[in-house]
Length: 72
Length: 143
Image 1 (tube, rainbow over the protein chains, first blue to last red):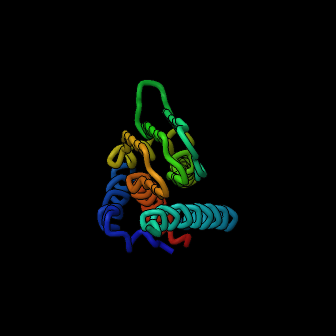
Image 2: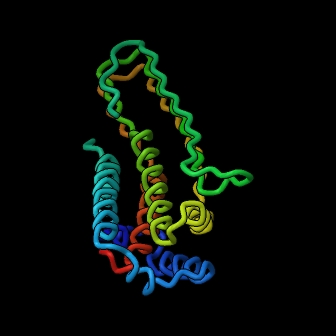
């Protein structure tokens, strides 16, 4: 679902991952603990939100790339 | 999005200025997107000119949506809106986006010209924000 990994101009996923881990750690957020605390509804809502935004970004990026190559 | 066709000595100008902050808290200017796009398209004494430009507004709203989503997910995670926002700020200040795009296109005394402009910076920005959102959610194994 993460199409951004294929983008040569994007920020490498590992950098983003490290950034998120670092901020979590500094703020005392334990993902494993959080995972247990999240209700099914919350998980579904987050999933739906991410899916929706991913689609929007994908559509926008593909549209931008399309216009990069004019016919003439 | 597309600005259609322009015939003859038509002058066309499109100007957008956006200052958009999704989460702005007292005393900080983090988690903000600053964007300015200036576009000038001048078609003069020409015919059969097609101009297509990128929709900056769409990207700006998408960016705002992503920032909001990041703050929201973090707020759910920590169970505290203020703390969630503050963590989102901390996360996004590293990739704080500020950009200014200016373009001028002047078509003079021409016929059958097709111009397409693009804004790759915007695409990179929204992708970076999506990456952050996905990384957060992946850590929680929600996806």
